Length: 358
Image 1 (cartoon, rainbow, N blue to C red):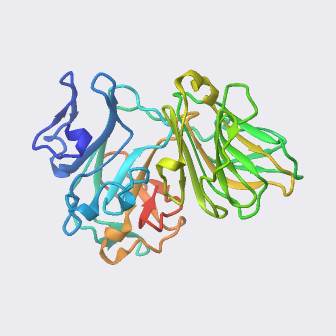
Image 2 (image 1 turned 90 degrees about the vertical axis):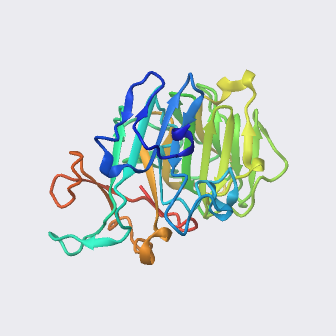
Image 3 (image 1 turned 90 degrees about the horizontal axis):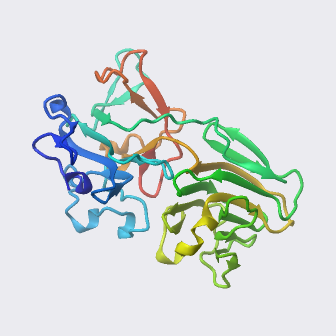
């Protein structure tokens, strides 16, 4: 229950078999705001991300306005009142009885200037992470195979383009390893009508997904049938997230979801959504889609969100990808002025929620 609700215990954390997961004696200096994500099939715990259930004053999460979800909407990401949120990237599985714990040293949220490089402003607070989940993110895996679409890989990102406009061009993914899947991209301001979502293994048409019209309107597609009602309007230029979790597909536009932006897949049709597909439906303009991120095919690791709006002076608000990084000391000693650190650059910030995302 402590893991589920983000409650910091006064002692160590054990699994259902009595195995030690977080040792308070070993991690006493970091036993503040201890939280975890993980999966326990026997205990019906499926928690792919987590955040604390309490924060520093004045953002106590017991207050109504500081709830778990952005704008108090359960279809949205975590709220801006959570200092740190971590979890598995969408579509990356967690093995049964797999946990990732972390806690902080209760240091200030101010920064200090590195004694070895005056250009570095380092957050005083440190976090310790303990996990039994093996993770080997692979950016070289084949994520999309195009037919009439050119696919260019750049790390964990793909670009899908056409040399000439044509309808019926498509790209498909391998089958999703755990049945889930996720796509994130910025909808081009000019594009052909296109379908993005899920198909049966070996198929080249969408069965359950969303159609993005060249007029900026979005329509749900259920069992291959396009809805006559619009799901959303004016989406060109917005950030799109499509996630399949179990038998439900969720659409977020600029981080905002809703029940009307969800599609439920019948149990009898579950094999009709076993892989991802992207398909053009008109030939008025060619497709140029950049920065497509895909989850569910293989291990793409974990993510972290740091709320810069809760920081003194909001110091990280204006930092860019080239200058804002997460420092990781693999030794666990918490030394961040050495040449042995791993550096993770931030992704595109979430301006609406005031978050730096890694």
